[in-house]
Length: 155
Image (cartoon, rainbow, N blue to C red; front, side, top):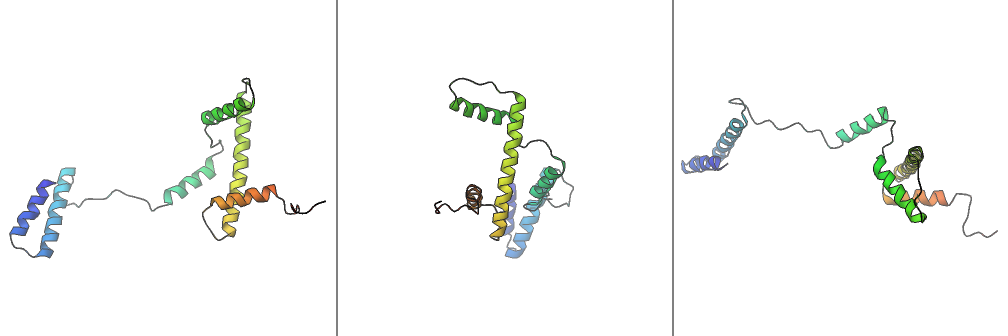
């Protein structure tokens, strides 16, 4: 790095015009960097390949939708959470089988999927792509207050 600065400094002292200095300095710096990286003689520095934002995420979503049937929630953290909740509800430690944990995990994922699906419909309805907390609150409200029930009406 220090060497390229010296080269550019020497070029400035030679009295060359500014435009030529910028291109000469850049060429010298690129050659020094390419040489340090072990590239061929007149090859430019190649930037690593990057996908556009969102491309990798969409590919991952497609992959998970196509091949995945296993639950997405990790087993160990889910088991700790359930044991903690059960411990708070009861005074003694309950024993829960592994099959019961699997059933709870599948049921939870199904419930979350349906909530997020409805929230996505609410986001689309409001001409948005992103699901926001207000969409989840709307889904929660609509599930707890069905269309036929009027909370203010007395029977």
